[in-house]
Length: 300
Image (cartoon, rainbow, N blue to C red; front, side):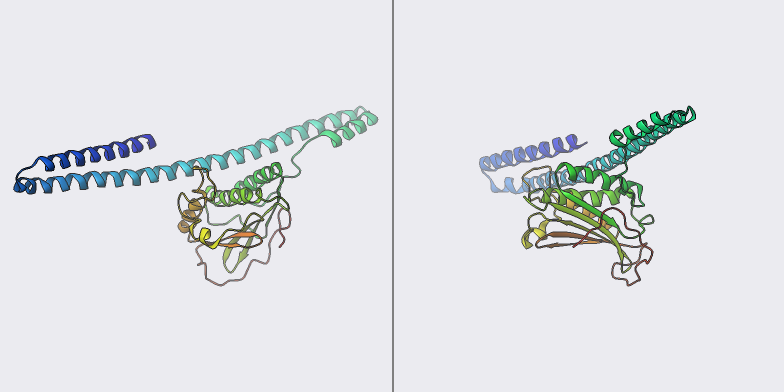
C-alpha cells in the first residue's frame, strides 16, 4: 500500500508538471488572446484536480505510515511479552527437573550426592529471579526488557510503580507504546553521557491521575527544541528513521485525554498525565493509600 501511494504521488506530480509545460508551450504559440481565455478554465480545473490528488495521496501516505509504525510497535511489545513467557516457562521446567532429581536422591538416601547437586545448582543454575513484576503483564515484559537493554549499554536503570495500575484505562499495547518510546528516547539520551548514565521511571497516582515520570541524565534539551519535540519527523538525531516516537506518544495521549510535560536541566524529565477512569486531568482527588513499590527505588 505504501509503495502504491508513493508511485501515485510521483506519477501525479510528474503528470502535473508535464501538463503545465505543455500549456505554457501552447500559450506561447497562441496568436489570439481570446483563444487563450477559452482554455484557461479547463487548464485551471486540471491543475486544481491534479493538486488535490497529490494532497489526497500524501494524506493517505501519512495515515499508512502511522499504521505501519503502530503495527511495528505492537509487534515489538508482543515479542517482549513472548520473550518473558519463554523465560518463565524455561525457569519452571528447570526448577521442576531439579526438584525431581533432588527428591530421587533423598529417597535413595544419597544425602551427600543431593548436597553436592544443590551446591552445583547454586553456583551455575541461571534463573529469572531478577524479573520484577509490576502488576501489569505487558508493562512487566516491557520494563524488564528495557532493563536488559540498559545493562548492555551500561546505563543504570531503575523503575518504581507506586500504585495499582491493573485497572488503568489505557489499552496495554498503547500504554507500552507510550512508555516504550519514552524509555527508548531516555536510553538514547543517557548513553550520550560519559559518567553517571542513568534512566529512571516512576508511576504514581496523584490528583485523580496516573502520573508517569521518565528521567534521564542525557544532554539538556533547549527550549526551542522542546517546542518541536512532538512534531512529526522532528529529531535531534540524524537518522531519517527517527522523529516519530514522541509524535506517536502525543497522538496516543490526546486519544486518552492525557497530556505530557517536559522539564530539562541537570536531568531531563518527561511527565505523562493519564486521567483515572475518565476523571479529568485537573480534577482533584485523594491518592490511593494502598500502593505497592515494584523494582528499584527511584530517587531524585
